[in-house]
Amino acid sequence: MKKHNFSAGPCILPQEVLLKASEAVIDFNNSGLSLIEISHRSKSFVDVMDHASALALELLGLEGKGYHALFLQGGASTQFLMAAYNLLENKAGYLNSGTWSAKALKEAKLFGEVIEVASSKDANYNYIPKGFDIPSDIDYFHCTSNNTIFGTQIKEFPNSPVPMVCDMSSDIFSRTLDFSKFDIIYAGAQKNMGPAGTTLVVVKKDVLGKVSRQIPSMLDYAVHIDKESMFNTPPVFAVYTSMLTLEWLKNLGGIAAIEEENEKKAKLMYSEIDLNPLFKGFAAKEDRSNMNATFNLTDESLKDTFETMAKEAGMNGINGHRSVGGYRASMYNALPLSSVAALVEVMSELERKA
Image (tube, rainbow, N blue to C red; front, side):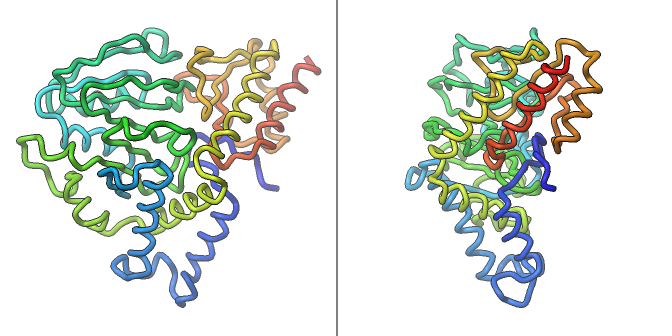
């Protein structure tokens, strides 16, 4: 039986994507060779890379606007330092809204002065800071759109007077935004797009070339743009599977269509959390993530009962991160509404039994 996969990452993927990807591992495009055997320089794979990059820009509405879509390696953690390496000359500003933004801030300090524009660390990151000012004398402003661990999400992005960099690892392609507000967007594929192994980086080229330091080739966005993500051997399976997922999303109707589904899932999930006296949400209501719902039991004596019921109902990956405890339901693009309904039914059944 296929389980209801609420794992925070690696993420659930569409069944049709998994089938096509598995077929390609055996025989890619009837070539008699596996996808992971062919040369990454072959036309067959170059076409995959080109198509994946074009799809990313198309879905984000950034075609013809001076942006380049790159598929790199090292995860978002490498982007923590890569963004700073390429942009930080004197001073940068960071919004500290969770574990990953704190890690990004830490890495950036290796390259220059970093100021914390605002932080929600005082409340264990259960809200998104608001009402802050972004200094106009910094090189760039960095934020994290969605905080997987704590279940918070930026609902309204600031109008930044300086280039804006955003880590969208856990909500990329999940909601409509004016993506042209950002100069660099990066996202590890394994949260909402594909398997672990590649990171989508969308770069507006005119933001580059303004630091005086020499940048190592592997960490230089300009090098990767020039080589069209082929400076070194790319993670072919991860790129191909991400391409399939982007095709799937386009065929559904794009980001606007999936946003409607994501809002239905979030509404159903949070309604149960708020109405059921046995559960309490962790994140501030106005900042709740549509991707990651975090919640706790109000009576810990029911822990074993609830977890046994959830397991028997086929739930996977609902345990919360150790920083928060409790539970986390990750409702990424490919998670069907029926899975959320199944989890809500377990929660309702617990209330009936208690």
